[in-house]
Image (cartoon, rainbow, N blue to C red; front, top):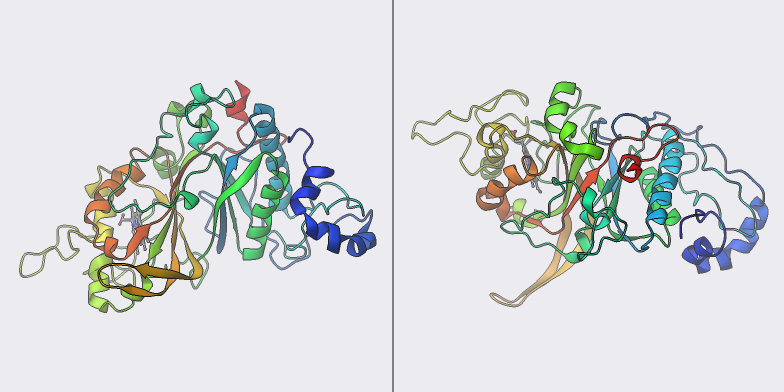
Length: 423
Ligand code: HEM
């Protein structure tokens, strides 16, 4: 039940569980009645707007960290979902502005704020909310009377060549992308939204990520060591965004929104790190140090896809990643990639045959996050070919996947998803 957000009472206490019960007494007694301290005195004072025509976190210059969570909806009441989206929007507006959450602490309730981000400042936090297919119908059941409003573009993604999707990293009825220049601020915000959603949503999968250029505005490098994000459409160009990223009149309640493809992609770093530099560059189609297209000098110079060497072979190989992603060979398709690297430590490998092999590998890769006006002419169009022919596929495995319809931004006093629930 979300009608009364779980700021107080049994449900939130239940969620926080024994911690609040056992540790709580003495600490809470000291803070009874206190209002959480304002967050505005930390170093990271810069803010990004929460309200607006579009949600932030899409064309916003990439922050250094992401915490992405996909949720299952565990209620069958439409009003619960709507109330949660309202609550998320209210709290997101405060968190992104660096304001304290509404409410006052008292000794007999769990604290209003879990508090680990106190004093860190807003850190350009953005919270971007999306809807998976399960919000509209799950197993053919129209749980919330929304089935008829499922956008055509919110397809079930096809199974791509090489996909090894794990159920525990795939799908989700709702998602939240929290981005900030500080990892703790991003995680705190995502954790807070999960916490207030107790009884309505349950986290299904989550992934933290990081990435930064050496200087602000510089293209960050992924774990393969290459600059990643060079050939994006320009987020500062409204025309390009209207064409490639924002849903237009065709989208009904989604107008002004965007579709997010979220895929954790594991990279076999041990394998990659043993490849010769020249081969690595052939795989990507770009020079490693400069990010320039093969045969070029500068990162942002156009790729000469027709250029050949003395033997008549393409300088940017036919099966290189950058060539296969280029708009010229994808009927002009472009997506806005806003990916982050991830590192989950080590994982165990046990291969039975052939040959017997056991050991540990780095559980790390890329949390691929790509925004587009329509995934059918965006991600699917580009990735269908890539999944079959890309030389990079020897080193990367898609282990999870989600497609989310991320509605337009909220107006002050409104909530993300209002256009969907309005009718
Ligand atoms: C672990 C997985 C991946 C890695 C490490 C990776 C890395 C890169 C790198 C280094 C570039 C060249 C620099 C740039 O233009 O940003 C690039 C370009 C690109 N990648 Fe990926 N990528 C991955 C997955 C994907 C996937 C799944 C897609 C799906 C559509 C994709 C689409 C593109 C596109 C469209 C370009 C730009 C091509 C162009 O216009 O020149 N990438 N990627």
